[in-house]
Amino acid sequence: MDQATQLRKLTEGNTSLKLVSSTKPMTKIIAIASGKGGVGKSTISVNLAISMAKAGQKVLVFDGDLGLANVNVILGIIPKYNLYHVVKGHKSLKDIIIQAPEGVDIIAGASGYSQLANLNDTQRNNLIKGFADLDSYDYMIIDTGAGISSNVIGLTLPADDVIVVTTPEPTAITDSYGLIKAIVSQSRDKNLKMVVNRVRSAIEGKKVADRVIDISGQFLEVRVENLGFIFQDDEVEKSIREQKPYIIHSPKSKASACLNRITYSLLNQEMDNSDDSGITGFFKKFFNFVDVREKQMSEEE
Image 1 (cartoon, rainbow, N blue to C red):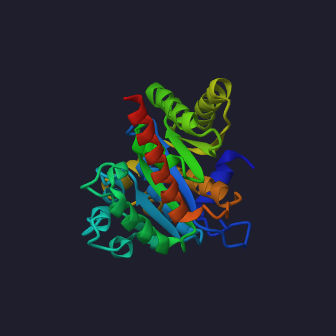
Image 2 (image 1 turned 120 degrees about the vertical axis):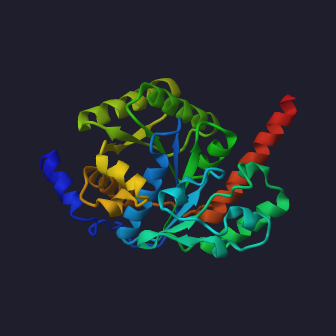
């Protein structure tokens, strides 16, 4: 089957995207990150969540780029409450969840807290207690900030999968390697995956992915999986301007076909069901990372 035929099949809708296993595991956490801003990370996060929901999954999107609130902007949503109200104890987490298209739930960023690492013990407990009620989701997608700040690295380390988004631009490729290096310096056993966005051809997408994967293997001795690519597509730009995700705005576009392929790959991978998995386990591990980093920094002073 040639590439054009495959793309046509994927644009017909993704009702066939089903999990292989019928066993109900705990929530799988996917962190989506990038070495630099402007590569389309947030757009991919939102569209991937909707694509998964269209395939029958219950999905929660957490805007980990707290101060910028990119997720709700992409969806054209103005949240009345956000994570700030939860950590302050004014609202429960369920109170601030926003329902987006296709039944995807959104937790908007907290404009009063640019760093989750800055929360005190009471605020941490408020957050963990709130997330304890949300383990009914199949997936939580975290749209992290761009770069290699401690907040970004802290959100990637407890995740089950980390998807690094890049583009064919040389600076984006270099920064994606820098992000992988920063993650590996803290944990060598992460499930690292790569998506190359805005490619002009499948050959270009493979070439960029292979370059990052090869140098990561050679110099960092880690395996990075090529999850796929997304074509440069005018329909994506139109959907952004209209604040309507392209998987809904233009379901038969080239970009939507590529995203459906990525969704299919993710949904057919085995899921961890260990005791420390799920959303509450994720945030416990995140705050443990924060505490360790703070201790290391105090010892270096």
